[in-house]
Image (cartoon, rainbow, N blue to C red; front, top):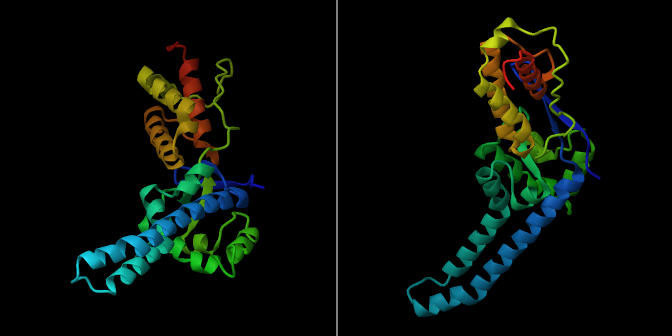
Length: 254
């Protein structure tokens, strides 16, 4: 069963970001898919080792007999240690299995992981996988509220769902007057209102890291122009909804 817990991140702008944590179920679904893909790569490597490399050695006599086994061992090494790290670097925290399951690895701060964090967390798979079937990793995930395995603790990462919780939705109740409305709100342009509303309508389709960055940039821009500031602990989406509502309450835009 997947976790319904939320990861709450308080940004320097005093805006609260909430991301749904990936549970054990979705993480093991992703792992199962990635393991199948790894097995397919192992099979391809075995076929090449048994059939293709010997034929190459026969046709080119000066190739050392030990080259084939060396290439095979190196190929298996790359698949075992490099599969997860390479995909998580290229796809910014995702592997094919994680993409199918709709989850992603991010930093504890909410930002995308880098190569060092991807490599670090995946080197720990050798420990998390002990004594088999990811026994250590499973126990570790069960013993902490954020479902983190040892690799996540070492790299400072967390696995979250791609889609943020749908409870935070825009409310366009123009009859509701905001007592904190700023006179500077009149400086907002129609283009900025369109920008905010476009983001709010498309936010659930955005990559989590892109969504956070976009929302914070828009919120910072509107705060500097209108003087409105998010309340302590207020979600960035709620702040943008409030700004858009106040702009519309001004009656200058249809």
